[in-house]
Amino acid sequence: DTHITPFVKKWNEDYGPGEDGYKHIIKQMYKDGLMPACVGPPWPSMYVDKKGPEEFDSFHELIFVDEMSRCGSGGVTWGILGGITIGLPPIIHFGSEELKKRVVPGCLNGDKVICLCITEPHAGSDVAGLQTTAEKSECGKYYIVNGSKKWITNGIWSDYYTVAVRTGGKGPKGISLLLIEKDMEGVSTRHMKCMGVWASGTTYINFDNVKVPVSNLIGKENKGWKYVMYNFNHERWTIICQSLRFARVCYEEAFKYASRRETFGRSLIKHQAIRMKLAEMIRKIESTQSWLESLTYQLTTMNKKEQNMKLGGAIALLKTHATKTFEFCAREAAQIFGGAAYTRGGVGEKVERLYRDVRAYAIPGGSEEIMMDFGSREAVKKFERFSRM
Image (cartoon, rainbow, N blue to C red):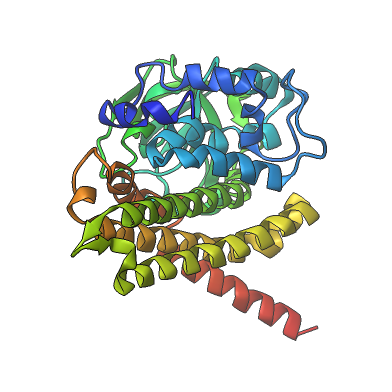
């Protein structure tokens, strides 16, 4: 409420807070003992000098992400959390000790910014089809990286890029993860102006014969697919948390406006049609909240391997449910506000902005169509497995 919300409108209109991005905010959040929560449990105590909550788990992280999203801007929320939440965990879980010690502390304390680079101009949800290549140099000390990444959150401000590259043959078995650094020769970035999340630093990144030391390989060569899939549950879960809070912001804004605004001699909320809209919004929000808390509880009772095996399909389906709920609430809130939500700024500012942000939640992390198909395929797979027992 002090350091973020008052500046949301300006940061959106300016496409971010400046050339250093949100480092000043991240530094303050680290000082307040909040920032390490963004990479999920367990608390990364070996890389920070801040003590986390006792028995830190996914419910603590849920509260953290939910509170951050109260600002009512996908762009600002992603600007602060979007890159690190998905770009740093692969290093924490699979990077070498040298890589962890060199990269993790600076990203968590705000000295450095990191982002995840998977999506390409011709490969979005089809991760196995990515075309960026990394070939070993003749001396064997470097990977030579060529290719492009598109729609990369925080890329314009990042010091580090966790990059999915092709080191082997076609398909998932030829993918690796590399840490590429901003100051390496051949790295270039340009800001992308998109429909929504203006303040998130969406970026097009080009790699032109970039020499990357083999020591920057994350995990093992050609095992990147496994690391990317391991990372997806956490990414999708954070998208769910944010989408649901944004849906609630739309509801709250619409409820307050309908209580104040008068038409035909009485407040809007006295009209049955408006109350029906609000009732439908909160019905969808609270059912989504229940599903989210149920899944979050399951996350606290399983190790990572079990989570990925048992919860991937359910998280994918909930992502679709949450983003559809967000879209519905943004639309209905805009209808209640009328022209006030069609105008940038003013009383309908949050709703107008969030309505533009919807697609940034429905598509990244796996589009709704991919998520629905994946969830149903996982259900069939489990049915077939257990029916043979």
